[in-house]
Amino acid sequence: MYDIMIQNLLSPVVLFFVLGILAALVKSDLKFPSALSETLSIFLLIAIGLKGGIELSKYSFAEVISPVVATLFLGSILPIITLLLLKIIKIDKKNAIALAATYGSVSIVTYGAAISFLEQIGTSYEGFMNAMVVLMESPAIIISLILLKVMDQKQSDSVAYSSKNIAFSSPATAWIDKDVLKEALFGKSILLLLGALIIGLVAGESALPAVQPLFMDMYNSVLILFLLSMGLTAGERLPEVRKHGIQLFLFGILMPIVGGTIGVLVAGMIGLSLGGMTLMGVLAGSASYIAAPAALRTSVPEANPSVYLGLALGITFPFNLIIGIPLYYQLAQWFILL
Image (cartoon, rainbow, N blue to C red; front, side, top):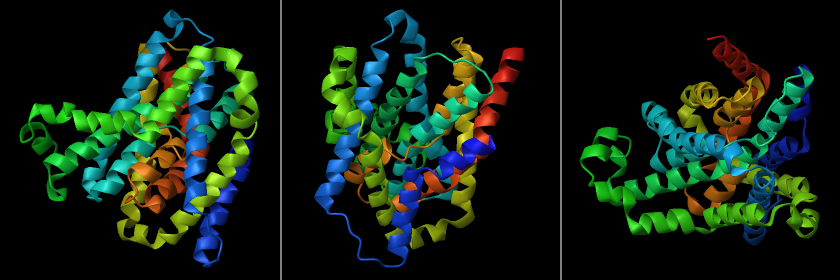
């Protein structure tokens, strides 16, 4: 477990994110053109969608229907749970929505560390879980954007976190407003992610010769550039996160425990193996620093990257590597013994 922690903490993607923060803190003249940052975001969203769709095409509908439903459920409910926890902190609306999308989505690096953990201890898992990684990205982003639009249209910032007001003072039609759904479902970030997933699913492995050289072989290199860019942005706005102090730190630890526990329980109820339950816990307990930030950069530009990206990488990511993954595995073992 120590080797997994060191390997991931010293991975190039994380180190380049740190380099970006350091460059901003020392006021380096290193800058990313806005067009390049947008291009990197588009690339990552397409690549993630294609990978998941191609992997999902290898299984029959009957094999994956229960895990797919469970994954979509987790991706939909976790943003709401995140907002309820953030109500205590009273963070502003834009950053709360960004955190909801981030913590409703999944960290691919954390998932990879969990795979290594299971292989080291000789625990097998269902192969289709690799597709669930991508499938879980979209629901959280969609739900978060819908919640943002509803808040913008029906409520002021002062009552944005009041579930009572949302439930009773807003008409039911607010939740199915056509303009809200149109922007949430067909905004460029969601459209690219879901569209690429469907294309990968339809084309299957026959698409590999066309997409592998660019979207798979170069994926890690482009990811490094993206995180360097996000590190610069986060570093420039890092002082803003200090006003939230210990509250955000505690949230970065509490939320993965809550989400991971729910993920393990849901996986157990649909009959996944010990390894599958552990991985579902990782999906629900981790926080995205790829797809969600790529979508948030354009969909919620007012949100502070040093809050949602810094929290995901600076607190939740190392917590999961050190404590979270073995914790979810232990929870899965307890569930099996019940």
